[in-house]
Image (tube, rainbow, N blue to C red; front, side, top):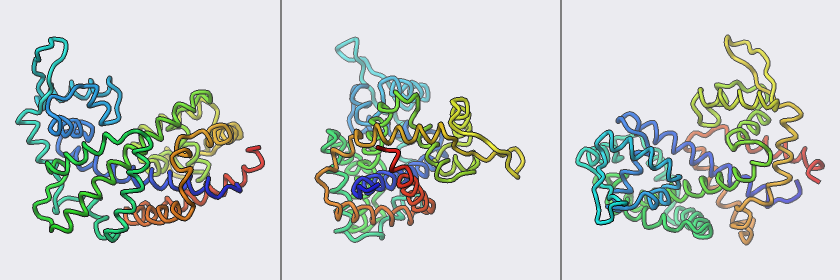
Length: 338
């Protein structure tokens, strides 16, 4: 590909995505040890930050669908962590966190004794560099029309819902609050990009996870399903289901591996053509191009260098190799994009 900026944007998205997946995976693992899931905890935070908030607004802040919120709320009500209270309008009820729900919020407050990945990033950048990163994502979120998340982040920081700041110095607290802001804007950005790309994939009869799996299999020929789950931050069962669907659609083929009950995965010509079609038809249509159209390449390179450092600190060791391989593949596809 001759368009250097297009590659830089592609790099930015992948670096951002893997940074988010790593932090989210780590955080989910920590929270699940307490008996609830991260989405359930997020709804407790939202209800605590905005008492009496409507279901629709919860969905907006959390970037979920209303049915997803309804299902999570049902679990929280059944666990007696949330209570529904009647309001003047009988068709609408108020949602509030119970004392038991408060306990789960407090148990999950991250402090110095816990293995929380944002703590690993505290000394990675100067305050000026951190401000640069925060402002970059803040600008994208504003362009995406998702700036409502700023009020939510201010609330969870001021109420210390996510992090217990009492044992941190004033300077460290300041940095941590910026990292919490970064993480939340990063999350909204990635979910928004996924949603945008998912809509464009309908004509190719492909889901977003299937597209991701195809790219990983193309980048790492002979990858096993278990390795795929690790590379994509999926559970082994999720990876197996995605592989099964790709095989059913005749986009990949399998070869018996040396390890018992394991198979090597390879993309076939139809799968490769699907990747080419997606890139040819959809790459220029992705909304990220609009958000970054006025961003200079120097600025993109600076933010990408920061993201490389974050991924390295988070031990996302394969990210740089993955991006290099994808760029080589895109270069080899170049003539086919015409």
